[in-house]
Image (cartoon, rainbow, N blue to C red; front, side):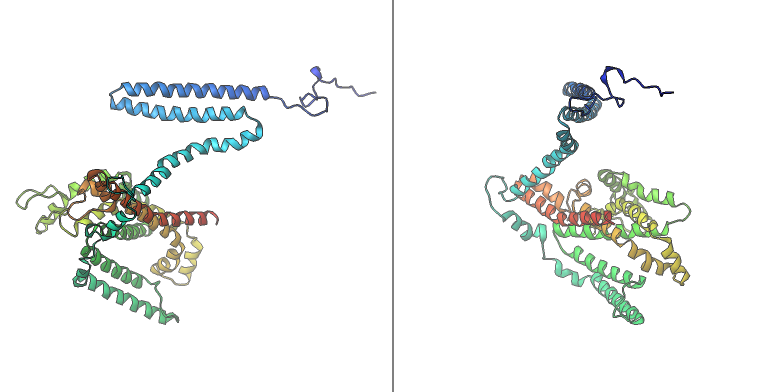
Length: 449
């Protein structure tokens, strides 16, 4: 008996559904379908762009704030979708190799163009304006930068010697001496010259450095010194408080609620936080009823009321508290995640060896999260160096509270000194640039682990 034969498919097609050409090479099927898909994408892109244009004219004819906001959302979404879909449709009509190479640029290109227009071009123009005169006409070279570092209002040295008469300075020196002494004693106990890993040593040295720097910042005068005070105080205190909360709340009952409450100020804008704290610091004459929380509590304790926003030089620190309040939650969240990532085996082994909780923290946990602490510190420094909103809303830079960003705004837009404003912006940019490089390098190193 012979096996039945299968008839070949009709239409001259092979069993795999392809039609052989004269050389026997299969001819791919579906080219017409790909072109149809590309045409459909172009039609959809045209419709979306048409909607964006239509809403653009509606926005131009509307006086309603709600309608303007709505049309802005619709225009941005439909225009972006139309551009991407249309560009992808055009790429589909090109040969395969060209389309493959072009598609990544279709999606990355608009973002790169936006970065170039919104960041690179303004940066280059600001650097150019910084070498012009205050009217922005003639080139004066580095004259504007010389003004920054020679003006007493910007970077003065007259009051620095007053720090040597400050009690904070001498208390700080004593604390530093105690810290160094403890480090030498601990080092001798383990056979080295110094050991700075104990809690008492670190706290004594940290307190000493804090008191010395605070005596410097309260004595020095100038916008740059104020900025340095912001950088040190916010970075050090917010990081320390965030680390303390992360450690104390780790794996305890109510951890989520406690962390949520501390993180809550992060949801408030700097302007909103400034308005809240202006009510806290509100001041009325001694005989009047105090509506500010701080003065109401202080007078209830028997103290004389004061205006925190005008009490030099500590009014700057009262402003700094606002940013510490807002950024402690950020430090807490980042450091808490790093602490939870510390292997439990290390901690259990230390407990078996008889280590106390304090020793576990200083000798096990802290070294393990050192890189995360560095990321938090550099991120906070970058944020604080650009601080503007809090000073603008609460004091407008008056009473010795000015910072670089607010001075830049005043020089460029209030006083019309284009060159000086651009020079201050350039100095701020150049100061932030190394910290951004450190952060980027750190992220790349961690991604390679």
